[in-house]
Image (tube, rainbow, N blue to C red):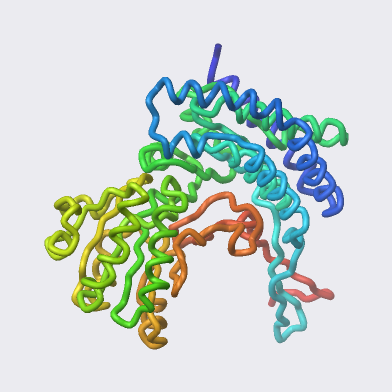
Length: 418
């Protein structure tokens, strides 16, 4: 097979479909999303059967329990995918929104209007829900989407994409606004990244290795985050019961995702009491602890930590723990080792909380809550397409508005430039 020709043909047809779809009224787009939700639920058994092939293959390959968990499709997760489609359908359509309008001295009016980006390429690994989430957001924002998943979820994602495309066909809409690259070859990705005349934006979702490979090889603009090294800082003014619940949730509730806590920072004044409290809970949950010398003195089970460990995104039941002398050292640690993804402080001191919010340079900065809330759905954006740690165009969870660009509109009544 000529891989370059295969991918190029897919991209050309997607670009053509995008021109049609970008003009559709909100009601038509919403109807498509709602029908897609119903179709996923109706085909749940088919989806689980396809997913079972991927899970068995992953188990044979020896993938971690956390990675297999991300891969699995259950009735609940299929229901969540359907609900995500419904949530996006219910959101205001950003396309055509005039975000600002002002008048010049000559009477001419100048404004900015939201418009679709065009064709968005999503390159992702082992999470089947991304197929439905990405499609929902891209279509609602008037875009077409090219989906290319990793080999781990090939059967699952192919089944989901086919269901979504069948809805478009039944509605006499262009199916190619949802395009799925079925080739697992790395060459297919490399060819996709060359097609800047057909694809307007690339969003990679997966591990740091995948994202860096995409950035290194893409001729197309890329929105990304390399990894999620998220922190929770337990201040000396923290409610320790609250801190215990927040830190436990941030690490244990779902450790294999990018907004899980990877390092817990604890003020030295509360460390003796707090670490004994939470150490037992982590032990019961099977969390492997790596700690500084102060942490090890308080928690004998904590293993010695190397400085390089502070840069790691474990995506597993492993946690770094460091005792710090004050908030200055906590913020310095976050700036040195963090990934500018999500960081949280637990404190009753309002001034400290506001200082933390101002000074920590991350896409999401939180006070008295779990880093696990760094999520488009939890923020009320609908299902997110990803989280960006870039500072241009989009930062943080990316919802509908982040999948549009703006164009200037100018309204005159005969003005001429002199």
